[in-house]
Image 1 (cartoon, rainbow over the protein chains, first blue to last red):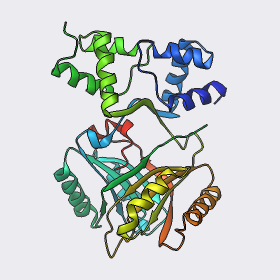
Image 2: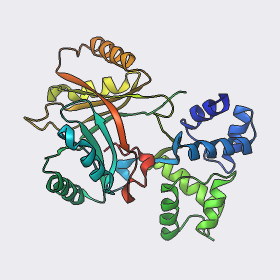
Image 3: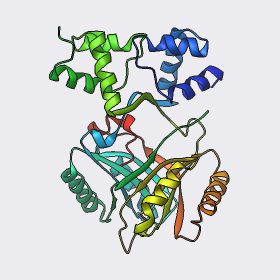
Image 4: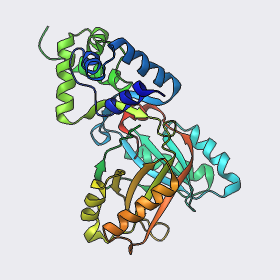
Length: 147
Length: 170
């Protein structure tokens, strides 16, 4: 990663201007051409340094239902359960964390009923009872990764 | 052609935006061609959605691990119900806190009702940062735990994670 990559990432985390030729605006700001900026962005998306470029939707306004859930998976079964969740389209991401509740995942479904059904299915398939921890109040959302 | 998109076009535009913004010098023109509208109509619709708060910005989702933010910690606290809003707002504004939410307790298995995410480069630094934060806000007496993630199995999923730009953090 070089200086241009870093500056581009930091700048784009603040948002692309909503104008006809947004890259022209950034090109002027950063001192590179629009084509150079677009090429770099494309490369970083292909490399997986970035996983998405586009509008950052507010989940609460999109319809659909979401929850954070956790499982306490016995260590010998951890990989198998992770694989099972990995195959479920409702599972948006899944982290191992250092805790008795060692598997933490987000469910994204069309509605609340589908969330309950998915949690029940996970319970049936694994024999483990998930913690269901839906968001009740949002105090801050401000992901920013200065590089 | 009228000034605004019809309902069908607006829906199509939203579906396209869920997959991201086209990587081209005139992205709104590219979107307009796909839904048979004008660049101006698309731009106005996108601005309107932005003003209404449907999305916060046209920006990035970074692979924070690839960028060296390997210490991803979830701080959970058991805050008395009467104080949780105030503490949530204060911690939410603290530097280094990426996300801050209230979630339900599930007694007896789970006693914590306030969740903060901290993304850092080094574990010991994140631990020190959290300790300082708790002391500064006089919260270190409250029951709390810091759960570091050690492995990521899946970063995005199916249809409803399509707006994955929405940080599907549940």
